[in-house]
Amino acid sequence: MCTSIVEIAHAEGMAKRGDDWFALSQAVVAYDHARHAPLGDVITLDFLNTGLGADARAGVELTLESAKALRAALDRAIAAADYEEAEVRGKGAVVRLVRSA
Image (cartoon, rainbow, N blue to C red; front, top):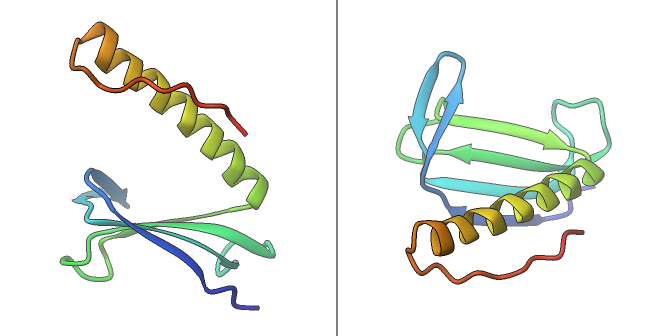
């Protein structure tokens, strides 16, 4: 079943596919049936550069439970990075406490 659940965000960074690294322009998060993993519906993360063609893509398929664990880990790492930037490096980032799922 196609869910039509798709979120697209601007992305700055780098991704690796095979032996090559490429600059990112976009991240796509979707919930749909797995295309490659032997699973049912999955959260799909696609990191890509739309200006470089189909080869500039790195994809991941995660179970919903794994995606939630990843989200919690990201929340903790981002909160720690915000603290590091604001308190340690004095860059004035706004520090927020994040409750993990």
